[in-house]
Length: 122
Image 1 (cartoon, rainbow, N blue to C red):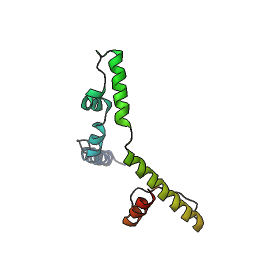
Image 2: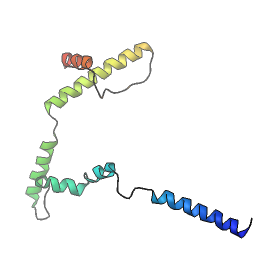
Image 3: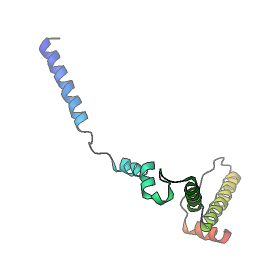
């Protein structure tokens, strides 16, 4: 292989590499942006009334912990919905077992017929 052909081959490889690296997007994707908004520092800034400041005394910290726990409690409607999903999943698992299928899945999206069945159960 001659020196000129080696130079040409090297030039082609470098040129090809530059094209692939320069075509990469410079801006972060929207998905990355959406994850960044949920960083702890951002959440504490948004919900600053639920987090103690460095100057907070222990009594205030306890009150804020209790307040965060109150906010985190599930609503009664969520509990009913959970029971409904559980009942539907158990019924589906029973039907699959009777059909000889050994897998279990979880209901995420309910059809209209399934919702009415859930409302009757829950």
